[in-house]
Every structure is written in C-alpha cells, then in structure tokens.
Length: 147
Image (cartoon, rainbow, N blue to C red):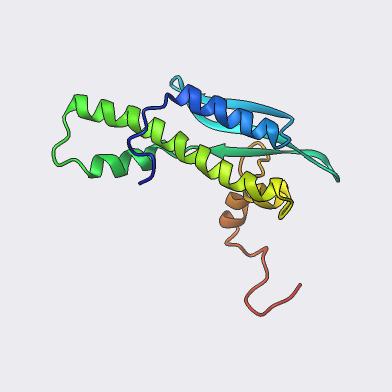
C-alpha cells in the first residue's frame, strides 16, 4: 500500500490538498469531521451551465485501518491506537496523491474538471456514483443499447 509509512500530519496533507484544489479552480473547500478527525472534503467546482456543483471526496480511513490491522498477528491496544493514527495519515496521503494525478490532465486541458470529479458530485445526501449504484446503474444504457 502506498504511503503506509507516511509521517506527514493529516492537517498538513489536507492543507496541501486545499492548495491543489484552489489552484485547480475550486471556489471553496469545506471539511467534515467525526470525533475530531477530518472524514471528507467538499469543494465547489464552477460549471458553465449551472454556476457550480459540490464535489465530496471522502477518505476511507476505516478500509485503510482494516488492511493495516490485518498485517498484525495479535494487535495490542497500543498497536491498534498507532495503526488508527497511521490509517488517517495514509488515507489522506493517498487522497492527496489521487487528486494530484487527477489535476494533471485538467491542467494540460486533456479533460475538464467535471469529467474527473463527476462520480463525486454531491447533492447533500449522496454522490452521483452512489445514486447510480443504488439504482442498479439502470440509468445507464445496457451493453449494446443506445439512448
């Protein structure tokens, strides 16, 4: 797993992500918290048609933590605490890397920002990807079908 030994504090990684998003044209960036930990970033992305859309990017810390704990034979309480802290650092560093990679083709005008972040459009309750998944992807044409 990439960044599984990162020592960069989560706050510093998130500040870097905010800088990247601002440089890419984000109008604002908002943080979501749970138990004092940042769980997701949302940002407003300008669009020519509707003014702007909200994009929500969660860091799946729990998934990273499960993978890290699975690598320990008999984790003790202190080990689990350290793994939890590492999972936060790792999840956010992975998110930073992903965002940096996604921004590159946007900067090179190979794609539009909305193309990259389309699955993460947030309506306040769920992302576009989650809405499609919940609907069984029935909104999409079946193989060989055109709409």
